[in-house]
Length: 496
Ligand code: NAD
Image 1 (cartoon, rainbow, N blue to C red):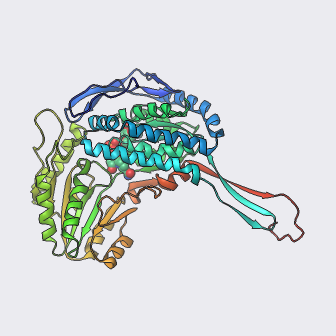
Image 2: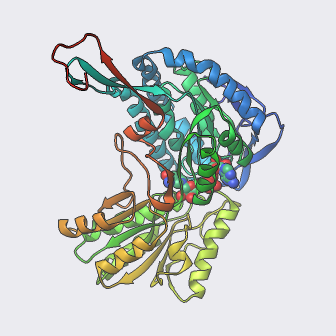
Image 3: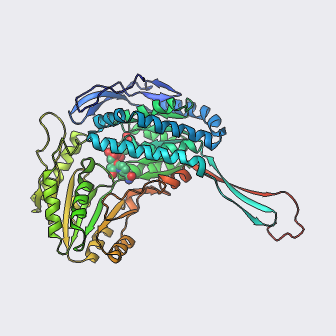
C-alpha cells in the first residue's frame, strides 16, 4: 500500500499530504520553499498544501528526465506500452480511491469523479493499443527504392493542465507521450495537484523507470520556466483562453512544438422536430454536469421556432437538481462570485431567470451554485458571449436555423457545438456550418473518444494538431522519413 493512499471513501472531510514535486522517482520540496493551501471546495477548507516551483525545480526535473529518456526510448514501443497495460489495471483496482480523491480536491460529485477516472482509463487503454498500431507505414516508391516513416520521440516534453479534470486531462497527454519514447514533465493545476500525485505513484508501480515521468507543482512561475526551457521539445497546455494564448506565444519562442487548448462558449441548437425527451435531458446534463466546469459544457441554447415544450422540460428538470447531491461544488470562492455576478447582471438586464441557482447548496462553508437557466437573453449579452464556467444556461430565442448559426458563428471561441433534430438534412447543414472543432448531433457533450482526437478551433485552441487519439501520438513524436536502396536497378527510373 502506498504511503499516499487516500483512505476516505465518502464525502466526509479528509486531509491529505503536502503535494510535492516528483523528480527522478522521489518526492522533493521545491527550491523556493513556498507552498499554498489546497482546498476541498465542498467544505471551503484546506485539505493540504502544494509546493510552488520555479526555474530551479524545472531544471532539476529536466535533468532527471533527460538522464532517463534515452534508455526509455531504446525500448521497443511494445515494451513501453506494457506500462500502460499495467497502469490501466492499477487504475481499475484503485478506482474508488482515485475517484474519491478527485471528488475531494475538485468538488465534483463522486459519480462524476468516477466517470472522469474511467475516461482517463480509456486514454491509458489507447496508449496501450499503440503497441500494435504505431507503425509508420512503408511503400516501395520506385524500382528498388523503399520509403518508410519511423515515429521518433521528441525527447523531454511537458504538459500543463487545468483544475477541472485533474486526472483525465493529464492522461490526454501522458500515454501517447510515454509510449512514444519521451520523458514527461507535468505541471498540474495548483488547485488540484493530488490526482497527478497518485498517477505518478501508479506509473512507478506499473514499472515506469524513475525519471521518465516527473511532476513540477506550482503556478505561473513553473509554467513560465517550462515555456522558456530550451531543452524541452514539446509542450501541451490545457486551460483558459487568455493563458493558452500567453503560453503558446512564450513556449513557441524556443522552437518547441506547442499546442494549447483554451476556453469555450458552446452553443446547442434545438429545432422543433427534435426528440423532446432525449433533447431536454441531454441539454440539462450538458450544462449542469461537473457544475458546468468543463470546456465541453453547454453554455448557450439557441431555441429555433416553437420549442417551448423542450424548454419547459429543461426548466423543470433543471429545477429538480440539488446542489451538493446532483451538482458538485465550485472550485474557488472567486469562481463562485464570478458565476453569481453573471446571473445578477442578466437579471438587471431584464432577462428571465427561469431557474435560479443562487443561494443553493448544503449548509456550511462550501462553494456552491445550483443549476440556473436564463431565458430570453439578447445575443450580445455577457452571459451569452463570455465563458461563465458554471452550471448556467443562457437561452436565446430565434426564428430560423440561419439566425442560430449566425450567432454561433460570431463567437470567438470554437470548442464545441451541437444540434438537436430528427432530420438528417438539418443535422448535416448545421454540422457543416458550425465554427467549432467538435460537433454533436443529439449529444450535448460531443467529446471525440479514442482513437479520435480532441481539440477546438479559433480562440479555443492555439497551435496545430489535436491532443488525444492518433493526433496526440503525432504531436508527441517526430516522423523520421527513411528512403532505402540496396542495389543498382537495371531498369531504374529518375527516382531510383
Ligand atoms: P487556467 O488557465 O487558470 O490554468 C491552467 C493552467 O495554467 C494551470 O496549471 C495554471 O497553474 C496555469 N496558469 C494559470 N495562470 C497562468 C499564467 N498567467 N501563466 C502561465 N500559467 C498559468 O485554467 P483553469 O481555471 O485551471 O481551468 C479552467 C479553464 O480551462 C476553462 O477556461 C476551461 O474552458 C479550460 N479547459 C479547456 C479544455 C479544452 O480542452 N479546451 C479542457 C479543460 C479545461
